[in-house]
Amino acid sequence: MRRLGLFLALLIVDWTFGIPGVGIETRTSSNSVMDWVYGIAFLALIVALVLTWRGKRFAVPLAMAVGAFAAMLAVADLFGLTSGQPAPAAMVVVDVGGIVVSTAIVWAAIRVGRRTPMTG
Image 1: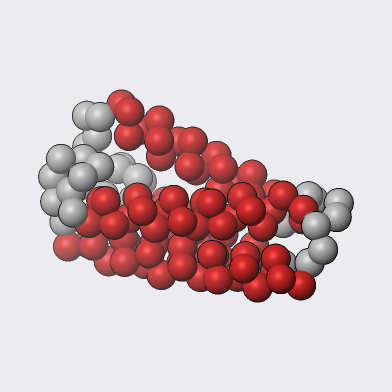
Image 2: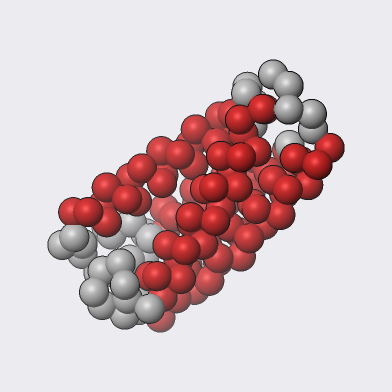
């Protein structure tokens, strides 16, 4: 479960680099729907990280969902589907890192799910 928590924390760091004005993202968002999508995904990421300490029964499925959704968001951003503009070179690195970390989250969640009984 520690490895899953580590990968979830790495995804938080990766997403922080993608926040305009905070990280290296230079595009400003004019799409309020995508702001909500990213906000809900980030909240689910925080909840999954907290559940790795407390509610182990729900941490694995939520982490798998967050990992898969984060990978889809990163791929969509690479192709410019989330902001209407293609990703700048620095954001391509962040998006590829997000894809790698998201894949690691799904992998770690599958491994934890196989050996952890579904009990509270």
